[in-house]
Length: 125
Image (cartoon, rainbow, N blue to C red):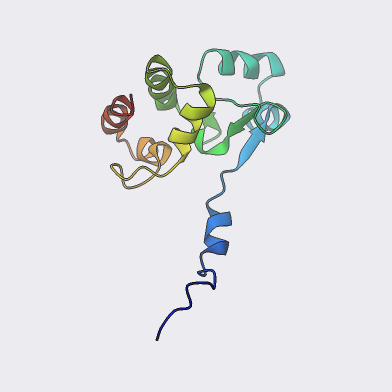
């Protein structure tokens, strides 16, 4: 009936289930069927948000849909970068839970809620 506050809640497995999946450039080459140069161009054009925080360049898998970069991500990423976010901060926001959206921004974009996500992004500044 009472819960021991010292015992970890059974969300330990849930937390690992929420860990984002990361794709390296070789992963993206295989998944998208594009050459390395094209993958780097997609990153430079902000069509794929990328980070080096864990070593090699990595892109969150959540920004892909049907084997392609989600087109809605670029505009949202540019809004965040214009607000002064670093690429890492923008990625964290895109793949993290947002209370106002009730889900992650990338999932809201996947659901067709682009305007709502962009408004939420603008409120981050």
